[in-house]
Length: 59
Image (cartoon, rainbow, N blue to C red; front, top):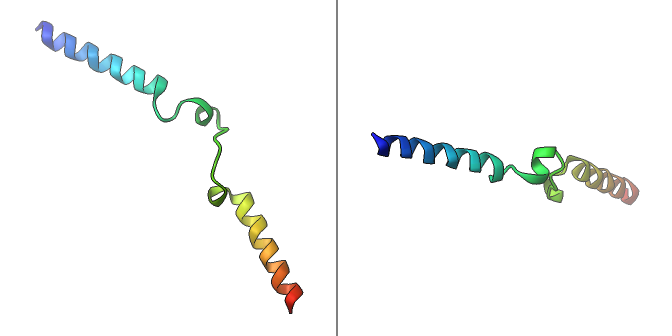
């Protein structure tokens, strides 16, 4: 019985540690995660607008 309680306790501690220090800690939790340029919708929109302007200027 003591082993079952120890396993449950260890599992509980592991889950709490994962929640505290897991992959979503730090900037991401506050919504300020740095994102790569190819994932940034504003960056992609600016690139698209620049390309359209260049194509329009070339015509």
